[in-house]
Length: 251
Ligand SMILES: *Cc1c(COP(=O)(O)O)cnc(C)c1O
Image 1 (cartoon, rainbow, N blue to C red):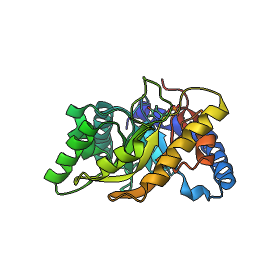
Image 2 (image 1 turned 180 degrees about the horizontal axis):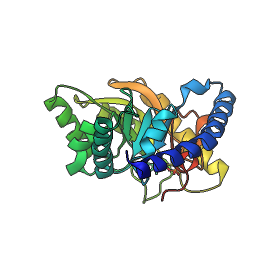
Image 3 (image 1 turned 120 degrees about the vertical axis):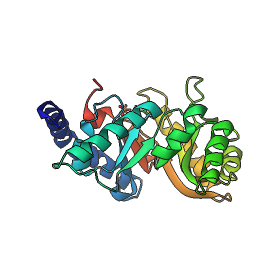
């Protein structure tokens, strides 16, 4: 890291010192309201759009789950981080860092996404699921995924519609090269708390019904972003994907 890089990292470290305690409070309070412990909810720090030197600030703040929404950007950042790790004696890349792919994955990028990410949140079609599964089989492993549910019915959002979602999850879970660990959703962009709550609750209901299906090996619910994560946690989220509220606006 040169001085300029270090300055960027320090700026993100200050932002996190300001913001992370508040985020943890919101999560703890919301988890308590849903009868759970704060430890049941994982923060995925969404670094998309932020410079690579934000990443050391995030891991030094104790966050180990990082999210990107584009495969190219994830590939790029991981490459640059490799260089930082090799060069920089002041910063070690924690071994337990996990990258999450949270955005739509084009089928031609599926293999790269599966190589780079610990968990792909955004399996939104049978064709993508099939491609990931074939890769998993070829590598003699199972690719960890969440099935994305379009609970708002908005045409601009990806995912399987709620209607028929349990069957869809079952079909994805039958694929031999995948490990289905739960569901993900994106709520509509609205301040209407009732709409947000019912969206998250619908996805939780799908999870409850799908949990008993063969091949479904987890009950993770990736729900909640900066503007709605408190409600998402109250409705059972186990992973919140937070960009702006943690790291400030994307430059
Ligand atoms: C960008 C993004 C987020 C984080 O958004 P913020 O509003 O900045 O917290 C979460 N999930 C997905 C899928 C995203 O693309």
